[in-house]
Image (cartoon, rainbow, N blue to C red; front, side):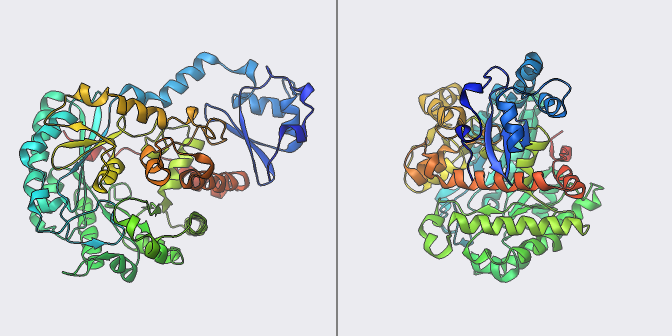
Length: 498
């Protein structure tokens, strides 16, 4: 159902100075209104009509409710809302906070959806040399952000352990002078992990992340490992790392291995099993990540892919199941929903780069290839691995920080990832919460701007926002408490380097 102004009001009775600029959409038979500040309200049709026509009066409950949420122009404290807007856009004052180091393109797994287009373990020429790694660290430390993370990726980054361990020590030494909030993260399949390596990672406060695609048969079918049982290796090390955190006296509800699945065609009917697997292995959060059109996933789409409608049906069923588990006392959340609810309910900018505007490309993250090439993001590097260097912004051996971050490519990406300038996004009800990814637009539609009218990116996020708004509109006190718990953010200070 859609609502046109001309269907519900007399246009000559509109009071254009009464309401703040707003967007609208029908949810559960009510009209959802949002404004650029991120406030929202649900209105009955009659309430919406009176609001548009400026017929509300001070003291009236509806007037006061809309005034509190900054929809009544005469009641808006412009200075206060300007400060609020500046707080939420504070990331614009800083350079990239995520620096992804691809330590090697080698990997001993044959994951059918691999976005990184990895190579075999014999290709030592794809390892990042220590000399290049130091240049990349030097570049990362020039970010104007007071905090940043160096994330080790691959391939399987532990295959280049000497460079990994050197970067940690080199970064720690540089930070003695720089004094930034520095953290390290490792994305690993655990297959090359040893007790000695884990001791190093724990001692040096390197956060550990991995992939877990669900129950054993599903995980091993997609994440092919010819030298062993990938599921047993992954879950065994998850348990061991979590025990180490517990031995350190850390809050185990906050500190644990971060895992995430990639949803393939075989996952769609197994949402309960996937969620149950995560709970069984101590995970308190699950990010139901859709298959993206990068790397091997582009060539295996016929085997692994599905429609966006299929994914949305899966997502709704999975989150419904997670909510039921919460009502039964099992505290687990879906992370994508939690990020969106943070924006809607908690009035926070959780710095999730895919839902920022301007987006995360370059000003939120950059990716460093083993040869020193610098890309707009992880996704920009994925496109390069497929033979297209459009998202390359330079090389640490040749360019300065200023050269990298002030060039025309960067400016074009910023404009393309700003939803206020995107047709369709500029008037969307979810504009204050959503964001764009130029790399995804380019790969799926051939343009960094994209066309939101037929974009699967837009369809995915708009549909999930619809789903969450439906939940919020109908939520009882128990469900609202669950959502509030999902939007409670606690810093993981343990992983910040001293």
